[in-house]
Structure formats: structure tokens, C-alpha cells
Image 1: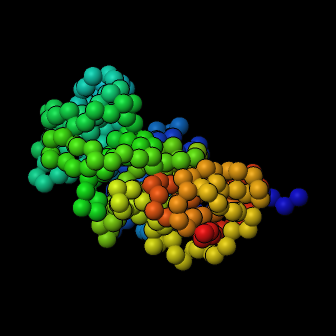
Image 2: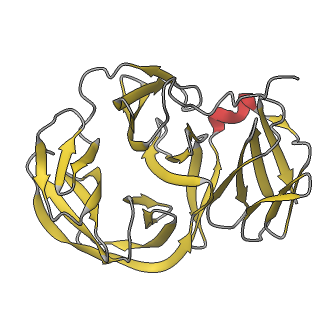
Image 3: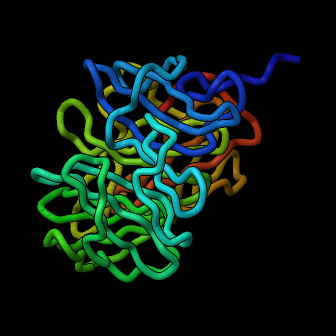
Length: 294
């Protein structure tokens, strides 16, 4: 019996898996992925966001990489000492640079709060950003003339005045196998997304906003790897099927874009919010394929 093909472009550590993504930074012209696995803090580097090379953690990650070591303690990935002590029901720090200071979001059971810092080490409470039930891994960023708040598999498009976020439209983003989406800017300033797919990392996607929908398209660095056609896959009315078996349900829309790499399938639908992911029971060709389905 032939061996089951393995994904070629979906990164996973040699030992264990990507348990949580802490962040993606760009340093010295290379992208650095920081993640948690059974061995603690892990690092992988890439020149193009497609091919990742696992390596020992080198030096101190940039000031945007934070996580909760224990409930109530926010830790910089480059240090074991907490930079902020908060209520134990706050979690999932997200840090970004805004003008001349740093901002941090933390998620609570019914709200998202904001802290601020001038040096990324000493933090003070700034505001309640927005009421949000069961927020997970909140991320806030400008995109397409608006602001987008992404939290777990939900998103909102609206406005941000530095203190509060005002929701104009809500939607669902992640569908199927996506567990944790992280966003960042690439070298060209495009808002990118990577996600955790079980034990592996997704392919890179470019985010955009159109008619209050948060859309995703393949990163142009994927172009050299794409082969048109994915045998056995069909999409109609938002249902993606593998040789007749329903593997993913997406909202209906325009053209459905399907990327396959062995048993991993990633899907977007034109004009519809979100990414979808599934695993095929019978892996096919172990290379990256693309199918555009009406």
C-alpha cells in the first residue's frame, strides 16, 4: 500500500504541535513565528510566510509578543517576569503600536478592555473597549478605511477613537477546522492572517473589508505553488464536498476558492466573510492545489 501523502506546506513542529500562536513579527527581513507547544516557547522563521523553518528560540522576541503564563499574569515572551497583573478572568493579550505608545487588549467574559504603555513594560488601564460576550483572542486593526475587531470566530467592523470601539457590523469569520487566527502586517503593509489547523499552521491569507464583510484571499507568495484543479471537490450553496461527502459548510456566495494540500482543505467564498478549513478522509496529491468553483 502506498504511504499516505503528508501536507507539504502546512508547518508543524518536528515534535508535538502548535498549541497556541503567540504572534508573528518581522525582524531583519525575516518573519518569525512564536508559538507554544509541549516544549514551551517555539520559534520558526520564514522568508515568504509559506515555507517555515523550525529553530531554537533566538534572542528576545519583539515587544509585541505576550502571553498569560498563569491566570492574572501577562508575561513578555522574552522574560519570565510579569509586566502586568490583572483580574484572573482576563486573558489573551494582544499588543500593537498606536502612534507614540503601545496598546494591549485583554478579553473578559463579557467585555474587552484596553491598557496602554509608553515603553511596553509598564502598563496602566485605559478603558473598556467594547462589550463582547465570551471574547477569545481579541485583535484590533485598521483595514479598508475602517477598524476591524476579530475575536475567536467572530468579527466586527466599526470605528475606534482610541478609547472605545463602536460596532457597525458583526459577522462570523472562522469556520470548520480553524481554531486560532492571528493577524499581522507583511513587508508590503498588507494585513495577513495565519491560523492553527489542529496540529499544523494554515497557509497565509490577505484580509480585506468589502461591504462590511471581512474577506480573505491567498497571499501572493503562494502563487508559485498553485496547481489548478482539485479532483473530487465540489462546492454548491456553500457546501464543500469531497467525492460527495460533506466536509465543510460555508455561507453561499460567489466563486468558491478551495486550496488543498494532502488531507488539508482551506476555503473562502467570494464576497462572504471568513475562512473555512477541513480535513479530507482520503488525502490526495501531496502538493498545493487550487480549485475555483462557481
